[in-house]
Amino acid sequence: MKKHLTTLAWLLVLANGLFWVWSHGGLRMLGWGPNDPREPQRVEEQLKPDAVRLLESNVNR
Image 1 (cartoon, rainbow, N blue to C red):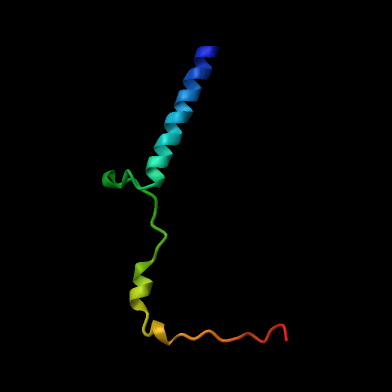
Image 2 (cartoon, rainbow, N blue to C red):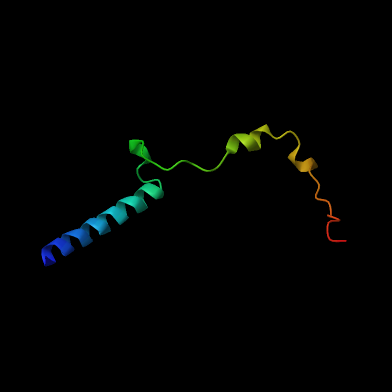
């Protein structure tokens, strides 16, 4: 029984290490990586980003 628990513990450590490498992009060269949440094409499509002004809200007045 102790051998099974030791094996299970090592498998969990290995799985955790593999997940960490995958989530930090270490496996992208193999085509295995998480999706990139950034959307750089949206920044490029902005027409006049410096023309945006923030206005005060009158909701709680």
